[in-house]
Length: 233
Image (cartoon, rainbow, N blue to C red):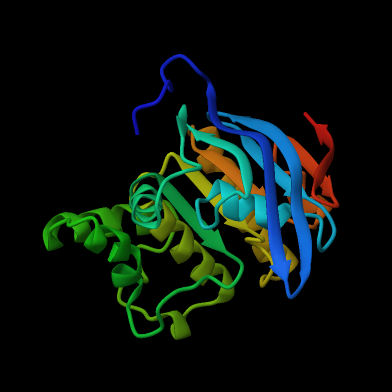
């Protein structure tokens, strides 16, 4: 990434972002000309009812989908027109993802799950193992490196997922309903960990429909019918 990140504190910016899906013969407008920016080091929650466009916005910001029209600037670069290979490379090197369902590989140990992005980045085994151990310790799982996901609690699996998302030292951490499969107490522990990562400088963009989870963010973006209804700073 080149861009203008040295002079522009907006790590992410959408301009008149529109996303239209074709459902049979009908066009469904999931985003309707959204313009919004996110500051470097911010912690934002995107909220809204089902069908509000929050998941579509997350997919666009995470380079998992592309706009129908408008522009998306990531660290000053317009990534709206990148091809699929370029978007994949961008995700691998600059972005991290945490999902509601953890998305761990059941056959792999905690260490191997954390190391997975580093394998695709071409890291050697010794360096990858050291990075995995550091990250496992960071999320409180240094004693679980040889365990498989089936031997972990839901909270522990999400901690592994967070460690894996941090493996490439991402510029932005995306969290899609990160506590959705967890009980209340465990969910709060995960949110405290995310808040700690944000306090250390990590930019976090989260999708949630739960007000008490969104309260951990310093900014809440409310969506409805593909537009931004309001922003709480």
